Length: 341
Image 1 (cartoon, one colour):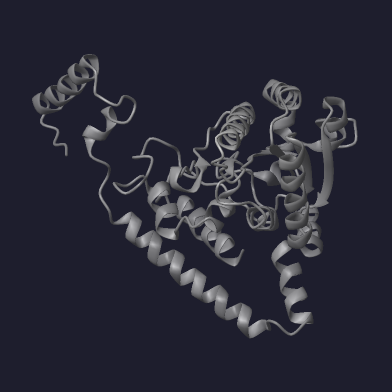
Image 2: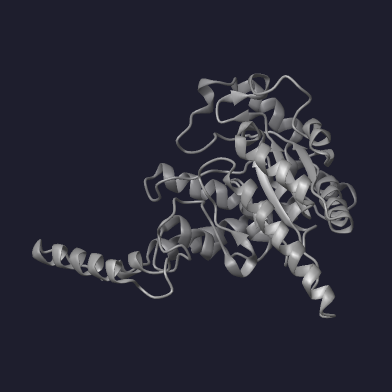
């Protein structure tokens, strides 16, 4: 959790310095990331929105990989085609982030249905694979999209083993929850879809872990979806393109931070039982800060992806029209004296 916050702080500052183009922090929501990720299994497929970097971090994505993506260099797994923080990693079953809200929800349903069919097929062949679920993360604002309704309806009727995980952090960019819905949050919608649901304190690491652990177990045992609503608070701006001081009072942020900050709460818990003290926390804090700075400096010094990568990955074999486009681009750059890799 400290590593995630340090990475967020440093890369956010790097954007302010003009070193990367965009960033989004997770300040105040770290317990959701680590609590849920620790309750999942490696074979489970993650469909995140854009504020769930800690889940990928828990699964083994390195600081170097995070920084390579944000700086869009030659080691970026996405080859520089995505905005910063739009991570993806096939090896870790973390599907690439999409900017449009809600698109990951219907995708997760389809993945969960396929996981269910694969498990049924392996069982009939007496070659049972370890069961897996899909989990879709989204903010409460995304629950106002048509994709949310479509996904919930399909998941319930198709009986897909998955978790809908709502991060209710109080704001959909600048729109407070009071202007988003008049009902009892998001989880109250679950019964209408014939879906089990639970609300949890999203700033309590252990509560989030327990909720996801039991939801995963229930989803696999019943072949059905579960909705979790984690109540938290977005301490930072929506993104580096946002200024939250224009729509919420600074005192509101200060009070919420003082009362519910998940890292402070966890530190106090560990200190109470003598497992950590202030000196230990400071040491970890400094260690993670230096590790992020080292990773960022390394990523920043690397070259851009090769120009040829623009025409790769979509097709297994490059079709004639892309071959012509690549040749045309190189000829255009050559005629205008522009060097390229």
